[in-house]
Length: 220
Image 1 (tube, rainbow, N blue to C red):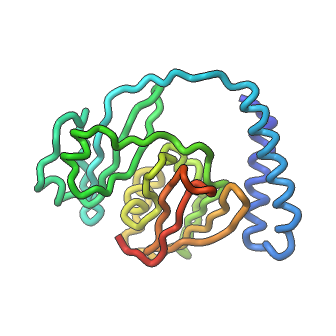
Image 2 (spheres, one colour):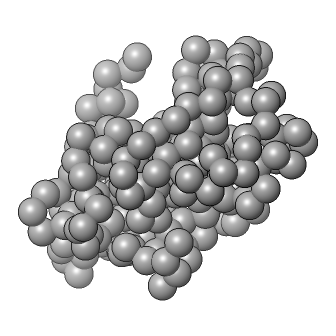
């Protein structure tokens, strides 16, 4: 690991977050600095990287009830899921192990049997990371969550809606947000700053210049 990149990245990440709340003062300066840093790191990463042959293992299906917090994991989903189980759990996520690392893709198709039989649910990684900073804030707790979101950066996946956040915050932070109104403060890879709330979510997309699409005022 190159600790120079790590330290500089951490410093710039914190500086970017401060700029979110003081954008009128710092934005013109930080935009050029952070862009220069990421261009430099990406350049050296591309010159040093070697082709990676990814080793895939079995795929699991996480089924979660966001009301009673019940979770059921189907091991190796070559088997289909019955209709009643499909109705019982309102959040479903594919868990896939690649090179001993877990990755997740949100499912929101109605007929999971067709999806599982077709086996084309995992559409690959994003070509570029979409976000530099994502912070959760409900007025009582403020938490940076972007590092834990990296395994979810899969093309055509949907993240950060309320159902996803209920499961995600319990899994990674042991924090129940069921009855909480919150704001997610986001800085994207182009230093664009914005917020999303309970009824908003994001779809990750390789066919979008920003690698994501924001959907607002849609409670799912």
